[in-house]
Image (spheres, rainbow, N blue to C red):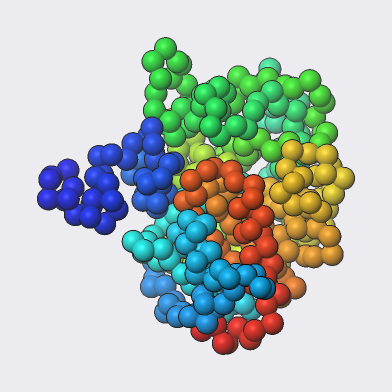
Length: 402
């Protein structure tokens, strides 16, 4: 990069482009840029839309931005968005965008890495293949991928993958130097390490061993389950995962721009966390889910999948699992979270503050992208969830926000 271009980049982002590397790209100050440019750091496959198109006219919603983030709070919505290191925030009610906010330096047309919201999109591809009779959630992984038979996944069912009920000797510890760092090297999210094997993602997954318990126990959130689900999808369909997302979801959805998915050195898809897209396109996906699988041009996701996902998560299994504090009355089904209790709201979420929140009762969909310092921040998670609940139940007419 020439010095002149480097200077222009640094003026906009606060650091030279050469400073952002695989060693630091998920940390501030680099993450605000790198989460919107993941394909520049990690090999990525394109998920094509039919025809790129301009985004809707931006909503200027000063009244909402100046309102208290919670009743009685001295903090406004705009200050909360800034404090929680939000990059982009878009909200619709009954299919109409009523709020939009972007951090300084963030373009509303930028794609953004959604991390584990990718898992929820992967499950939608699975749902379509199941409806077409190409896949059965009761089958074991080993029946489809013989290479997995000596691993933890060999005798796990696809339903157990979908619901995160696989017994896996693996720690989902984002800041560790153990198995999770090895996992990230295999997917090319971390730089190579001297003396460590140069293995692809699938080989790494096949090396994981079963935990002490049987499969089918308490909910245990472990990302390798979702990456293995992507391998299964490619095997049964005979197609690349990115092409499936494009043809089955992205084009029918009418997405405004291409999306991207990171891949390993052999082209294996990172279906647990590598998806990037514009916030408005993720909002479209949320609205489709709110409408029981029907997008602007017709049905995309089988209605029975939506109904099963919303109703059939097990609250007891969730309460015994390792994410129970995230949603005290929640459930988890088919890679989606249900708020639980007496509410119908459900969501997809990713580390560093990514959210897609859907409330069918109030016809509200919220997308919040962020570059939070910490991959997991429990107190801020609860603030975000309370913020979404407030927005969904707010009595101020949506028209007054625009």
